[in-house]
Image 1 (spheres, helix red, strand yellow):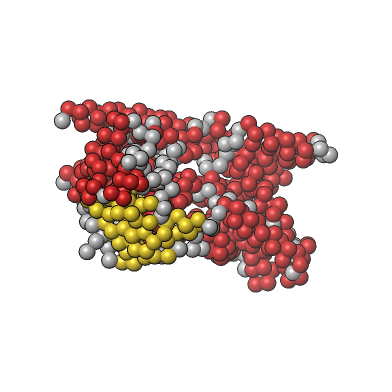
Image 2: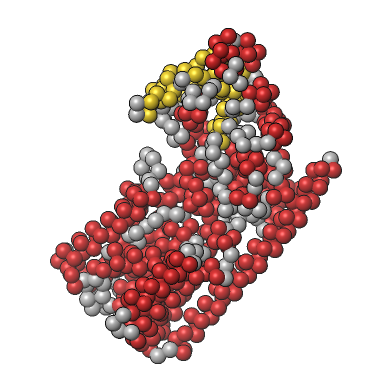
Length: 357
Length: 244
């Protein structure tokens, strides 16, 4: 069958060419990730203490941005209430510290993650697990309403400190060691960011990641392939909630207090901006977006006290208008954002060897 | 025992009755054509069978199970597959990933997260692409394909899960004569393991490929039988074949 042989040879060449493209794109991504990591590792050495505190806040918010990027950038679920999980975990660990004197890092961080997960499961179960798939508008308004309601509840509930929130949260502890703001807290947050980032990268490049890409592109179509699309969405939403919970509990201990804004619409919108600015669906875009937006806000508010929000707003608009795929699209190709899921050449060889034996 | 049995299917959209008590029976390894003039309710009946629409009335049985209230996911897992009238391949994914996506639809969550079947599915992906003459484009984005190739890709995706019944809504729409001929060639071999319900306007194509036909007119079944019987049917000739 010469035709089939020619066809297979062409397919092999196409595969080799494609593998080359993918590995080039991944090399670019790896270089960017490496540079960001090296920059982040040396930062506390180069910065004044007060700037290290600011950098820690950025790292924690970048972790929060990852949660939104996973939910929106990969699964296409528009969550306008991501702060609900961030803030509820923050309030939860603040109450643990205030009322039960629980500050051990080994308890409060898992507890915060669990709170985010449970809240996301509850809200996701309600919004996503109906008989018929929920529309994007329904999910965005549902999550927005959830965050707004939580904000109002926190403001009006005396036990949660009302408008003032819960101040003077004691520092996190590890045995007898107190972890207060500074370079140690920074490296803890950075370590957690790296772990969560690597776990997310593993997830989005797996076959599960391909299912997420299908979900994002055409949810109705993939239901006809046998995917339980609503379950997939609820799972990703819950993972996003857990990551937001982890970052919220870190944030609460880092800042030393929690307040209603942390659980409401303001922070929910802020995280959308981080991800859109950096580039959704790439993970690194969310991290870079957070660093740039927060860095710019910090610098502008110092130098242009009266008009800095206007300058920042215009900059964000310009990026979203001219680079709708975010700043990361300047260096990363569309292919990296969409993803490619073919098995690696060495995996295929192993599979063929396995089949032959 | 028939593979598929749809009886008394009625579908009403507001004041419009799109399907009015239609019935359809498909046997194992049968290619069954669903024909009729525009607006006769073919696509709506197909959607009611596939679960894309919920019938207002009527029952659908598949492999001896009542699946009338099954979701599309449950129907797919029971062995039914659908190709939409409007091509709905995932345009930004590569052809390879489109097929892999369709193939792994029945994998468990654990297998998906740990990519346990990716290596094993590779050969099947390449085999499907080779079978549908798309192997040399395997790593192009699906959006880069011609309309006809996108239709083939979608048929390949619909077949990837090894369904017992494939529902094809206008598979040759917008294709050239040569592409139609190739589509027929691509479909014939699946008869060994799969039944087919096909909605199509191209009567030559239908006559060429189908064993039995059902003719719909204004949402009702006008006639059903072998291709020869339908061709000889006076009422069909009157309302439909004469126009063709």
